[in-house]
Image (cartoon, rainbow, N blue to C red; front, side, top):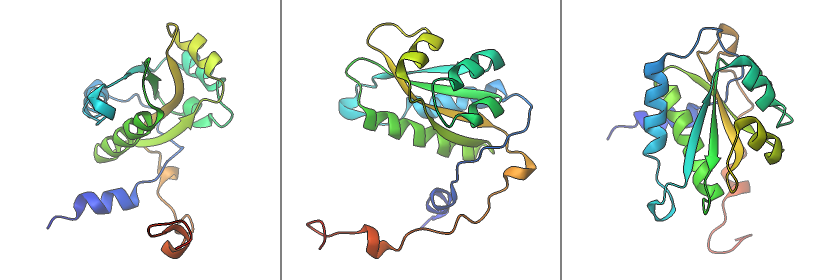
Amino acid sequence: MNLDTYREILRLRALRSYESRPVGSAHVDQLIEAARWTGSSKNLQNWSFIVVDDPQQQEALAGAGDFTDPVRAAPLTIALVQEPAGYEFDTGRLAQNIMLAADALGLATCPITLHRDDVAAEVLGLPEGRRCRYAIAVGYPSESAAPRSFGGRKPVEELLHRNRYGS
């Protein structure tokens, strides 16, 4: 049995501090390919991606959320666009695949919520019926971004229920 993937999932952390160097185009292509292969409801793949690497555009996009400093700090942000009839659950799966792929490539990521959909849509030039609620800040981790202890996790007894809530 190979537990490498399992261990990688357990150690994945959102990192918010990046080197200033741009993310290489080969890595961007690999991230988009990993995203493209994410499973989706009924395999509809009702999503698209906008790679944002212009600092002014990133600053404008950061204005669509409340906790968006990682977008300002990262050399690259991938905006996750929910196409018509898309599901938010699928967008979450997409985000996690991008984050896992980035980690495997030696990149740091941080998921971002864009609280003001209308601002994100305007900044990104989204056509009617599309929504961008989430983005992923991406960059090479700075030395200060080294994983640190986050106090662990809640005990499984506080989280797990069997057959009915509270059981």
